[in-house]
Amino acid sequence: MNEAKKRLEGKVALITGGARGIGRSIADAMAAEGAVVGVLDLREDLAQAAADEIKATGAQAMAFGGNVAERDTFVKAVTAMKQAHGHFDIIVNNAIWVRYGPIADITPEMLNRMVGTGFNSVVWGIQVGAEAMTEGGSIINIASAAAFLGVPEAMVYGGVKAGVLGLTRSSAVDLGPRGIRVNAVCPGSVLTEGMQNNVTPEKIAVRAQRTPLRRLGEVQDIASAAMFLASSESSWITGTSILVDGGVTHALL
Figure 1 (cartoon, rainbow, N blue to C red):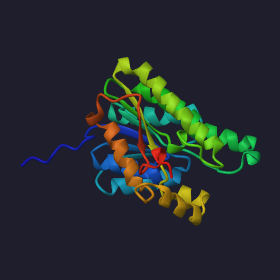
Figure 2 (figure 1 turned 180 degrees about the vertical axis):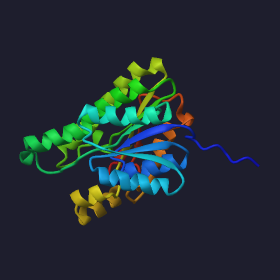
Figure 3 (figure 1 turned 120 degrees about the vertical axis):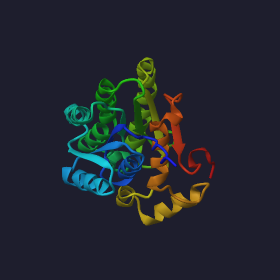
Figure 4 (figure 1 turned 90 degrees about the horizontal axis):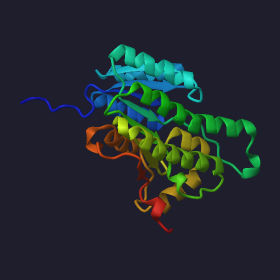
């Protein structure tokens, strides 16, 4: 019996913020399904460690360090992947830097970093990724349920993620005639290192209780949605957003 073909066999994918958390889970999932994955992270040492661990499983991976707020970071990574493998197929714009707090505490430095990492990076990822893609390419932007909700002390984060949905819809219209799809995944509360650094254990417990499925998300939940959007299973889906939130966005609790 022939071994079943992997869902992303022969594809080349770049994941921003791919060294940890949701990004790492997406990189692992795509590598397991046959893709060559590029792990892009601000800290090159963490990107290299993640790539080495992925390669230890028998999959293919490359590591890149750089600030995703800068266009040249994408140019270097995408160009290297396309030169090494002859084509470029998937980009996952996942990187984000988050700080929650009262509106009065927002500083220019905080605003610039959150917008640069969470919004500008998506612009550059879409632009540079699409330039390297041919028909069948898939761009996946990681937004948030906060794009639909009023989350306390998260004005900038919610605004950035709502902006990501606007980028997704408009670029899907522009790139559709070239056969390139653009979609977004909108996670609810996912228990990552980043959440634990920004949210108290008490608030984490409240979030789980207010979620209809009565649990927080796991990184694998988000990776599964990204895998679907990267694969041919979603070949007629573009410009949309998928809520992966345990039902919390539409719950009146």
